Length: 160
Image (cartoon, rainbow, N blue to C red):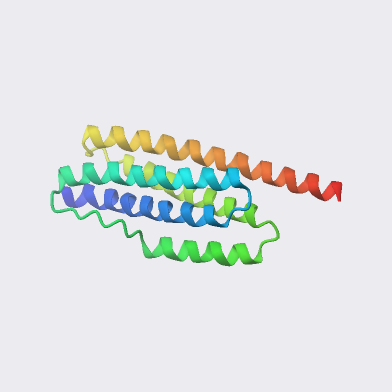
């Protein structure tokens, strides 16, 4: 396996998981509903764990790999955009969940793309498939939460 070819997408995933960790922590801090905030905090911790698992595997293939947990500039820009959308949205919790879903969708696409590399070691492929499944489940859960938030808003508007 050519480490330069296989490691670049893995390092990208590693950084994106760092973005997700920071993004979920930021989103949780903005939630008014304690259950949703706790869920997003849990996702932040889960993404940090996924990042550590991936770092261990990258380090096995490339001992000089530095696990910096910095995230990406794109992630920083996405979080800034979340802040702007939150300020402009009529339903801030809904807008935050929309952004979380968008981020998970992007992460899911990246996992799919990286898994297309058939030269990836079997152990890494297993880890990535497991992590991709966790991201897919999270995306579905966030979409369901978003529907619940919308239904609650509609109910509250009708009751007013």
